[in-house]
Amino acid sequence: NTKKKNTTTTNNNNKKKPALSRPERKRLERETKAAAAASLSPRATYRRRVLSRPSSPSDPYSLHSNTLPRLTATSTADDVMRAIKRAQNMHDEHDLRHIEQFLLDEVDETFAYGYRGSLLARLAVAALHMNHHELAREALRVRRVEHWESMMPMESAAIVRGLLRVHNVSDAMEVLEGELALLP
Image (tube, rainbow, N blue to C red; front, side):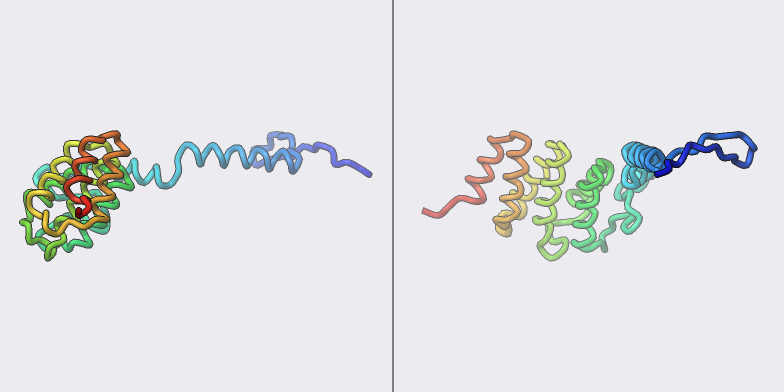
């Protein structure tokens, strides 16, 4: 049973450096890998880079997304839904505001063949997730006024969950009574 002794090695600069044993080397590698992962994950780096990009003040419907850089009148409901989901996942307040402006100001109630109410419900849920209560309240108001006949129970349930998650019980009860009321 002979143990390996710590030996010295030389690098390119001809400086002597003590060689670490394999367990010590592996421990050091794990520590540096964990420190790097904690400080700058790829998602955090991407988010920081994308959200710091300057936006054009002359383009009110520009987005930070690479796949959908701008909302237009020819955008489909699927495009808007993907933009809402991306803004929620990335916590992108800029995109959420631009989507709100697009849905409330740019398009009319016939946008996407009647799916505008569903998009407003999804926008409200995303806004509640990001603690933008005014945006959510406005989206819910427009949805209630213009799309009351096409409101779906699953959308209303998601809104109620979002409202309860932010402790807005009075609005949640109003949605429950108005949209999910049981027939006598």
